[in-house]
Length: 106
Image 1 (cartoon, one colour):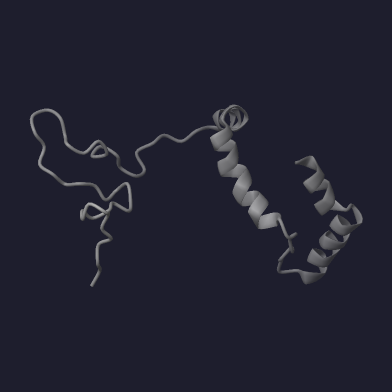
Image 2: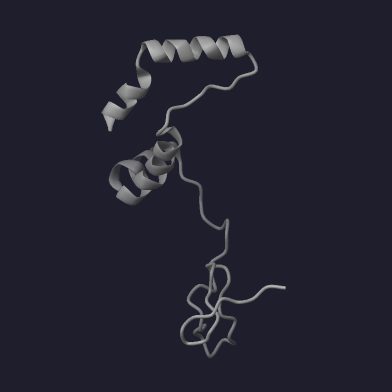
């Protein structure tokens, strides 16, 4: 049993772009501006296009950078099947002071 969240006007709030008002279409115009949106209908970008988008669009840059910064803010730990090799990698990264150097880049 789910309850709709209602706004101050008493109408249910739409919580997702795919959950739209399903009013009947009138004439040639559909009452819902999102009725043509479907997930997975976009085209895939190539490496060059992605690089240009990252370089020239601050929103695209934030989509990439913010999660990476959040995940590595407190450092990182390498997990591998071979624990001895993982320890060697981590020791070398510590010798290079990699975490501080990555922070200094930003």
